[in-house]
Structure formats: C-alpha cells, structure tokens
Image 1 (tube, rainbow, N blue to C red):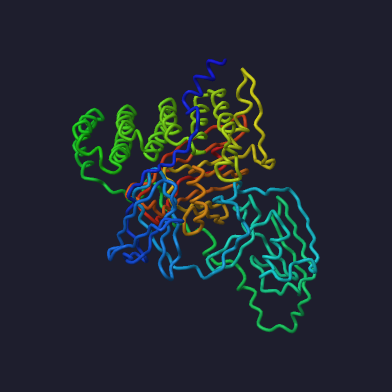
Image 2 (spheres, rainbow, N blue to C red):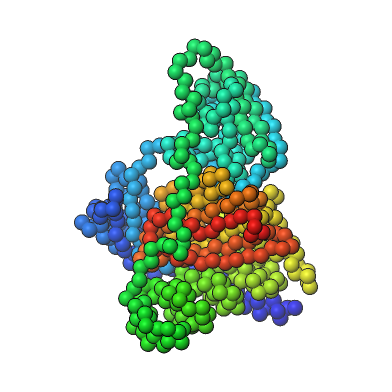
Length: 542
C-alpha cells in the first residue's frame, strides 16, 4: 500500500513552490478601438513605474514577468487589466467605450453563471413582505426585493432593465409580476412608498410569481400603456446559430498538398514529407488533424500527428491541454494521463492541473489514484472554493467517493450542502487558454435564452481570478430535460493571440445515476462573433 501511494505521489512535485517566473519577457501586440488602431494608449505594470504607449499603428511592447498585471488606459475608454501568465507573449487588446448604464451588482460570485439550469432550487415557497419593511432608499422595487430574497438574482437585458430569475432555474424564464391584478414580465415604475405588500409564490409547477399590492389610484392616472412592459422578440432565441460543421474554416496552403491522396496511407506519406517544413507554423498539427479526421476514418494517423505535436509542445501548457483534450475525445485515456502528468509538473500552482489529473485517473477507473490526487491537493493547502473549479471539484469528489469498492479512504467534506448530485445532464466546458473570451447560450424548448459571458468586457475580475487560481472550466447542470430540444450555442470573442482556442465539452447524461454515460467533443475556434450550435439535447438522449 505504501509503495503504491509513493509511486503515485512521485508524479507530483514533493514540495510545491511558487513557479512565478522572475525572468522578464517581452509582451507585445496591437491595440484597437472600433476596429481601428489606437495610438497613445498607456500600458503600464501595476504597482511599478514601468510603462510605455502604443504607436501610430496601435503596436506596443513591454517587458514583464509572470504574475504582473498589465494596465491599458486611454482617456474616455474603459481600462483593461490583464494578468501575465507563464505562456503570455502576445496580447491584442480591444479598448471599449465606458458603459454609462449602471450594472446590477447583486450576484457577486466570480462565476460564469449559476451551476444549475432548468429546475427550481426549491419545491414550493411562499414569502410575504410588508411594504413598510422594504428599503425606501433602494433604486427600484426590483432592487428592494433582491435585498430580501436570497434565491432571486437579476440579469440586465439589452435595454438596461434588470430582469429577475430564480437562481438555478434561469432557463425556466424570468419571474412573472402581478401588480394590482395586472401581469408583467418587468414591473411598471412604482415608488417603494406606494407598495402595501409583496407576496412571492414559487413552485415547480407554476414557476415564480411576485404579487404586488399598491396604494395607487389608477383612476387618476392617464395613458398607461401596459404593453410597454413586456419582453420584445430580442429576449427570445431567433435561430441565428450555425452548425459547427458549417462554420467557415481557413484552409492553409499545406492542406492543398493532400488533394490527390486517395487513402489514409497516402495522406500519412504526404504528412511525413511536409512535417519538418511546416511543424512550427501556428496550429499546423490541429489543422492536419481536422482535415484528416473529416476525410479518413483512420485513428492511427491522428495519433501519429498528436504524438508529433506532443513532442514539440513539451513545455507549452496551452498546447498540451489541447492535445490531451483530443486524446480524450479519441478514447486514448492512457495517453491523456501522460499529458496531464506533464501539466501538473509545469503548473503545480494551478487548480485545473489537479482536477484534470484526477479526472484522467477516473477515466481509467483508477479510483484510488483519483482520490489520492484530491487528498494531495487539499493537504498542500489548496481549497475547494466557491467558484467554477470549486463546483467541478465538488461534483466529482461526491461522484467518485463510492466508486472505490476495494479499499477505504477518508472522507472529504464538501461545504456546498445544496450541491446537486443527480441530474439529467451535466455539461463541463474546458478551454485551453485563459485568454479565451466567449458567450455560452442555452436555449430551452420554449425558445427562452440564458446567456453566460466569459470576457474582460463583462467581468474582468473573473478572468483575473481564473488566472490567479489556475482554472479554465465551467460546469452546468440541467436537472430535468423538458419535452423538446435544448440548444447549447457558443460565440467566440477571441483570445488576444494569433492561435485558435480549443474547447472541450464533456456531456454526462443521467449524471449521478446508475445508467450514467458521457461523451467528449472537442471544438476549434478562430472566427470571432459567429454564433455556433455545439449541442442539441433532448429527453431521447437519456
């Protein structure tokens, strides 16, 4: 037993030391505003006197080290703050106009969104609020109610209006307002002093209704247009996503060299002939893999290309993650494990490194090694925090605990007592670079949309948190698939580099149930601002 534990722990550094690289390196790129180069942008390293500025073409360069925060400032535009990582070299920045609309600050957790979608966090709730107890200084009735009700949260629509949802049931749609017997999707303007009482009714059957009784004398109010307070078509899905297979793909010149090949054997010969010439070009190996995977059903040639790529990318965590994703999609879990071992040694301070290594052991049904990774992670002082990677750790620790039938191990306490352990679908999104920015869109069978954005524009603090703690992943649980199709769409916003972003989506059907199964899909994104349909889910898949 002791020998086995020793051999396992040997793959992880015995002493975790800070890998912050004290060696300076040059960071460079171009700065744009409204698609035009922007000159005279001030670039500085926070808490230092080091600074520079962009030239007439928007180009800049500055020497910095891993752990530094670069600040990009220009009068009248929103500041941009970027944390430098071990792999950071190119940062192309888009400066944006300052937002003049006050944003809702109720949901302060550094998450992309709620972990659960499509089911209420409670069965039946009835809450009565005396109007006199509402905060008279609150900006709106919505804000006053948010102060009272913890299971509600607000998201801002395209018109700057705060729309209320039940946490964990965003895809069931927003709450319904009943104000003095009239129904609305958002409340009409009401002074808080005019509210007599509020009753909140929430049930799985009827959803959430907020009933408001006021002292308003409607006979004295003229020209009330009730229709102004309902959602417009912009709040519903308009079928504007293209299928992933139909996306625009750039074809490099070296791909044309395969046009006369008729078999995978001939294609392999062409690849071996051209490899030394093109192997250092950006995304060469993945372009070859994408082409050959579509044209030939030959796993061996794909593994050869991946092996060559792995040999070249030995010290690049972003490339290694992409390689591991593809191994997992091809069900080559032993090869993926080898890559994840390399990643935990390259990035021993990253939470994602340990989660991925534990998951790689789990894929091989090595439950004891999975558990030892969890324990090693916690024993070294890391914590399972209330963020995206913490949610994933919680789910997988709970799920894997009872799978080891041949031995015993100490329990790990999960503080999230409301953690969902069973659901129709669990989706885990992982991306290979922390600079990736995107919008995830979930559409329920009623065409109601819930969007989650991972970007510096919406939440720069989240991106910095991801880099500091080392995670690039997100979990979504759909507890009950309703009748009809659910869509998962992805809009890529870029990654400040010239290389694409590789996205892995792991779909667990019947999560936490005896008939659980999973599927891994790997996607590559280069084109910006094109909404792409990744998945279509329905109850027939269960």
